[in-house]
Length: 355
Image (tube, rainbow, N blue to C red; front, side, top):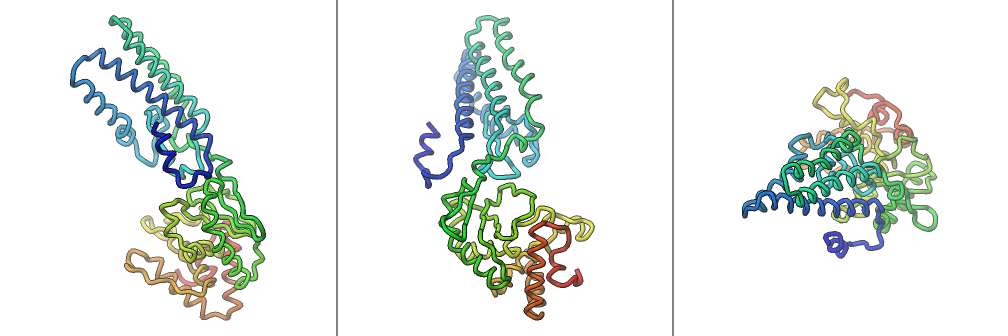
């Protein structure tokens, strides 16, 4: 019923629907059956007006709060999947992932055991029969718990159909993940403009723009040199913030490349234990500002945005160089980002200046 009611609020009826969602709905339905049968058994064992509210409170705590209380939100163990609540991935987005077939089968086995125990307990007439009714739960836990993945995040796998790209007709191509194909119309115009800017400023003959969800797992393979690859959050509540200008800027960050996972983290050897690598996003921002012939907006609170000063200083130093050298340095940044080679990106723009 919940699924049917929610389906009536779809904004994009023709959008991608994963078959993995059907499995989640089926598991949810089985969880409801198990909950009803267990509640009936408890009501028969404890015939009191207080039983329903107590069971309801305990159920809410067990399902909603207990997983968060027994583990860190970002490092939850796989056993939290024994609780009949959707435990989503914390490292990547729902839209392009689904629960693995093995995990769904284990959840079905566990919930079937709980349901069987609830029904048997409801029908049991004596102490021995009631103890025997608990055997399905014990057996289910003994089999299912060790077979679950060590971490919750490992239970979620990429949906290859959702991450496959669909492209606009004609040349140049603009492509986007199938899961977000409804947003293609938002990005076609800015994508064509980004290709034009790259051709004018860098003489780049790219012929394709690929837009991926910022939560997608990007392959570590080198990015093709003839395409622009960008990652943006693609959801209805965020797309309103992505005007054509904002989308164009995102596509030109890093000179038309996706961020490199080996660059954006912390580097204690260079920056200290508590300071993130702000030089990397600053270098990518400088590339976008140079390509667009714009200047960064001053931060409303400079202390909260230390990268802003780096962008302004680096852009000014870059503009002071001959145009040919400016172009060469932006091209060197793009080349480094295409392969995610190690090295300080800001040094490529400043010529190895002081840190």
